[in-house]
Image (tube, rainbow, N blue to C red; front, top):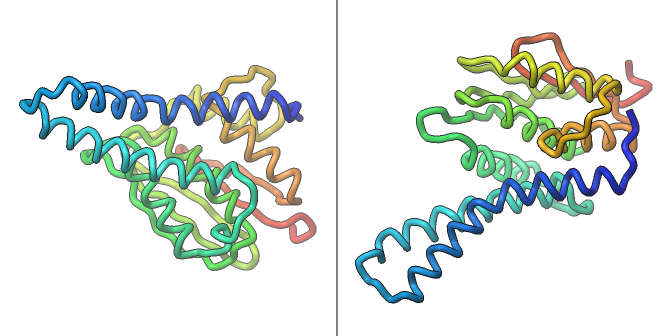
Length: 207
């Protein structure tokens, strides 16, 4: 399924706005409390501002790499790993963390890795582990956890990656964008058979 670029842009903008609006609202509320001058709430205000600003910073860095114009940081594996770790730290809560095992040096799949991580993070509601590894020119982004995603979410993902889903939903913007990115860059994309979302990437012509 090929999506018109304008529609894809709208889907991505809607999704990213959704992912930051809550913390933007929290910052606005904290500023409002500051303006009221009630010092009884100062500790709460500091906590809100610290937490929300950290989340916004981590997510915006991640989104910049995943959806923005190419930049040198996509080729910096140390920066890429930190950006992914910081983003995963904004998902879920301390009781259900998302761990990362980052084992790659090949920069050619950087954007695909970011998008795959975002897709997986959306589905790992009880935490788990994401492993990113490479072998013989192929790159793997696999996940495992204590609670598998719903069958409905997995079905939507399979349909989008298989090119047969016509219903557009901003929730799945990373999946639509990943398909578009793979087509544009000549990357072959596979969704592996598993209870959890797992991807394999390779350059076309290397099958």
